[in-house]
Image 1 (cartoon, rainbow, N blue to C red):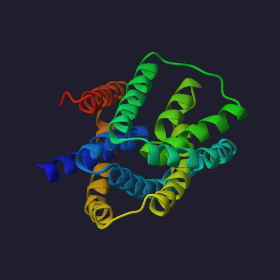
Image 2 (image 1 turned 60 degrees about the vertical axis):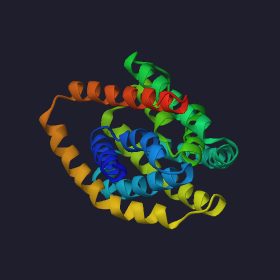
Image 3 (image 1 turned 45 degrees about the horizontal axis):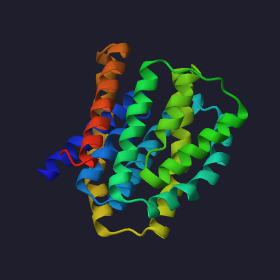
Image 4 (image 1 turned 180 degrees about the horizontal axis):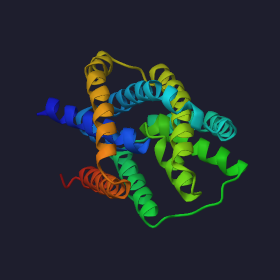
Length: 240
């Protein structure tokens, strides 16, 4: 049963990643926390997300806004150690609760079409928040997605810049996790088994994206995100 759930999580998260540019960590992390210890779930997510970024980066490199990317990286350097400290100090139930609330709030704000003006200081701040979330819960996407969506950033630029930032942040975060938290065989064996599933998911996601309307896919994405958030919220509260 756990093996089947693992396969479904990786496939669905990979499909979502292909279409939105942010879906893998947001969908995968909460459910991986149900199957693995926190450090294992987060490191598996970091490894697979890094592989996805490497696989897709050449295809979207022309869409990267390098000025914003630089400011994101500067901010993340400050946020990374904060996230590591949070992970080492917080317990599993609070971690799950935090992940669920982030997902729910993010999704509601996206549905309500939250808007904000983009500037250099906010670029650095968002990079810091993203960095801290990466090393604490393995999810850099929420601040970036909310910020880019709120500034009406073009879809191509959002995907390109976000993916380029992921390439940096996942690599550094994985090193920090391994050094300060430690790693084990389960993490690397599970990640190795998941790699073929990731590429199958990326391929299927491209096919699905061509077959359905973008607005319909966005609704599906919101439903998946809200289900994930509320499921994890109930699980962390002991109702499941």
